[in-house]
Length: 179
Image 1 (tube, rainbow, N blue to C red):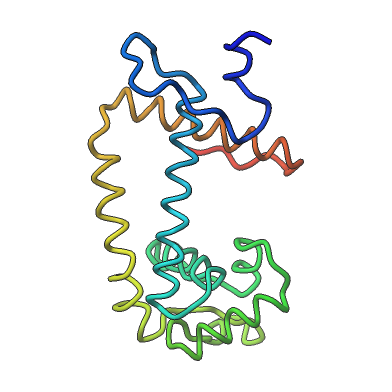
Image 2 (cartoon, rainbow, N blue to C red; image 1 turned 120 degrees about the vertical axis):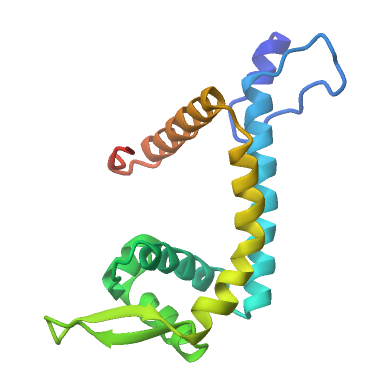
């Protein structure tokens, strides 16, 4: 096998590129390694945020989803949350119970369909949760804002093609088209 074939790899864990080789141009493998490194750091951040907020990572994912929904002035039902997290309704009930006990969310009856429940921010959601995510948001937004418009288009196109490639690999239905 030629060295360029070996660099392409067949799996997720690609060999590192030659460090310090000034005549070498970055390759797709370098991009994938950078993406993997970012994901590892971001995963560590999620663990630290979970510890800071004294919740588990599933609950943190639920709060991230709900914060996005609330930011758009929309409501979220337990079913919406279950679909977003990819968990069962029983597991969703446990997540909601823990978050409600911790003061991050409240259950409220739907104004029209009194049988339905809407999840809304609790007392801790607006202050503690948002301040915990502020550290991440500031740094990530600054990094994204430093991209030129051409770089933004390239990175966005790449990440969406990666999203589609993974969705195809695991046999998920097509993701909705992004604007």
